Amino acid sequence: MAQDVTSESPEALRKELERYHLVVNDLHRKIRELESELQITTAVAEMPGVIVTRPELQQTMARLVSKIAMIVQAEKIMIFLYHAENSELTLLSPALGVTDDQATEIAIKPDQGITGEVYRTGESAIYNDALNDPRVLSDIVSKLRIRNGIAVPLVIKQRDEEERIVQERVIGVAHACNKRYEQEFNQDDLRLLEMLGEQAAAVISNAQLYITLTEEKQRIEDALESIRAGVIVISSEGSIRLMNRATCQLLNLPVDGYEGKQFAKVITSEEILKLLNETFNTHHEQSIEIELPDEQVFRAETSTVAGENGQLSDVVVIFTDITDIRHLERMKTTFVSTVSHELRTPLTSIKGFISTLIDDTEELYDSRTRQEFYGIIDQECDRLTRMISDLLNVSRIESGRALDMQISEINLRKLVRQVLNTQQQYTAEHKLINKVPEDLSTIEGDPDKVAQILDNLVGNAIKYSPEGGQVVVDAMDEGKMVRIDVTDEGLGVPQRHQDKIFDRFQMVDGDTRRQGIKGTGIGLYLVRHLAHAHGGDVKLTWSEMNKGSTFSVRLPKIAQIEQSQE
Ligand code: ADP
Image 1 (cartoon, helix red, strand yellow):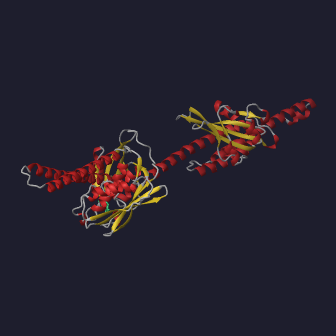
Image 2 (image 1 turned 45 degrees about the vertical axis):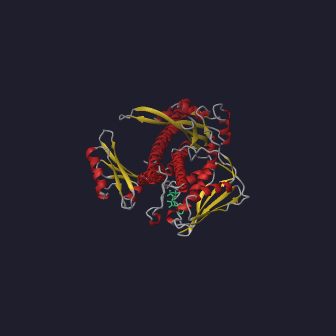
Image 3 (image 1 turned 180 degrees about the horizontal axis):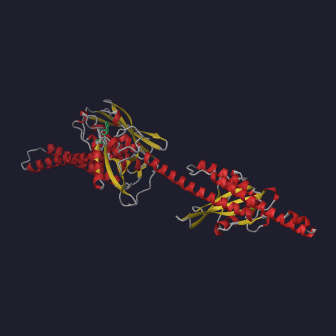
């Protein structure tokens, strides 16, 4: 062919040279294409198979964006992802050539700019005159100093077994901006970015799915670890999938390291093993109560989880601490019997004295004795009334209804005097002293309820001083509040009971000192509620065994509650 050329005319030679030139150019283009494809293949091959954490995803993205920048020869690479929660496309970090501050400021709606258009249509775009292109968002372009660029959709392609695409979903948009060496982007660049975009989309969506799942799993595991109930999940083959900290504590086992072990080798409690074996055999949910040596009571309940094929996949055991419920049930039973007893005592006495008076047709008793009988009947009736009123108030509190408050101005010295006069009728061994200063400021409150508070505290002071002694009621000004102290010289409250005595049905029992002292365990519970209902409080401020106690109530001078409409 070379010989032919030399023999041709200059014109023919020139034409031949032009043809050569075209062939060489074509070859150059093909080489460039091959080089790019090679770079893409290397870039893809360098991407890790499974990305498990967010930092790993960040590292991979950092590598990917610089590879893309190199391949399409761009200065800036930005990957936008669509977030359905706020319908926005935001910049995935890291972006190349964009600072983190700039990146956080950029959020684009799907109906905005070229990014929105590419996201909506799924069509790539070239914008070689960014500053004058009406499609682009001018503020972003000028802020980021973008001269030209290309944008491609990030598409997730779902394929069937024969690699046919069955579904496509756009998850975001990738931009390559500012061609280096002052050139413009062309269709070849677009094709390259599309190919890279496809790989990036797959990596991002897989990683995000994986990360979301692992984070979700971690959250569930953390939640299971932190709850008070014990949880064990056992596979159908009997190996432990999960056993939380609460279970380990409950079963008295060291925490950790049970995953994959057979439950029969880990759990030693015969009751629980029986429960599990029954669940595995019958596939029916079971439940038992277990009482531990330290008086803790648990309910263990099993439930079965069916797999996709309907077969047994897991057995879940949940342990709930029902110690408090059982304790409360016991306390309630005791309470009902003590209350019945407490109510019967004054009734028996009333009935006894009335029967005696009725039977005394011959008037064997003189008028002084009769008067005494009437006095006792009267006192016992008052005692019954007070007890019933306490019970009604407790039932009101228990059912969550607000107490009916009738607020008026209270002169505490006068109220204390009334309470002490009534209480003095029941005792000759105690000296009840009213030390409330005459000039103490009045308070706003419900007089009946404040009287009930004082009645309970003074009643207790008498009751828990079986040897007699002084019961002093004092009061003082404390700024916005008034403090009332009820002090006795009685038994005192043992240290370990001091926190509990204000709880319902709590009595310092099992104590020989109580012999002969009757109670229901609702007095202080009620006192606390009544004080709270006024915006005040009650505390045991001093107590020494066999020396006495001081209970202090603080009540606001100005009513802190809304008057009841009932
Ligand atoms: P109770 O009906 O048993 O008196 P309370 O709720 O009034 O119920 O009191 C709870 C417990 O607090 C009592 O059982 C008693 O042991 C203790 N307590 C209350 N007041 C006094 C006091 N002034 N001195 C000693 N112990 C007291």
